[in-house]
Amino acid sequence: MDRTQLLLTLSITLFALGLIGVMVRRNALVMLMCMELMLNGVILSLVTFAAHSATLSGAVLVFLVFVVAAAEIAIAIPIVLLLSRQRHTLDVSAYSELKG
Image (cartoon, rainbow, N blue to C red; front, side, top):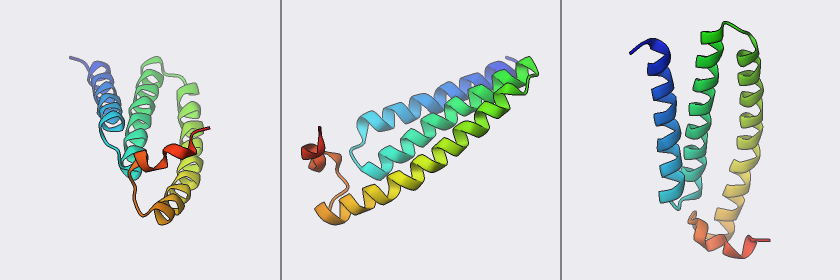
């Protein structure tokens, strides 16, 4: 197994673990961390394909994804903390009335 296949296997594993965590867990903060794990799996595959093809476009795309992920976390964490203070729980089933 060469390095590219190993890194792609690792990225698929990271994404799968994150997906299982989002589907199984009901804690809002754990779900956010699992989504970040999924995002890291995607980023690892982008870096792997960019290194395999020896182009710079993958690195630029990874930088863009990192910026968007940082903004998403900077917005999501305060929202989750405000909701948890209001309901006194992090269980996402307690927020069913927020559906639009």
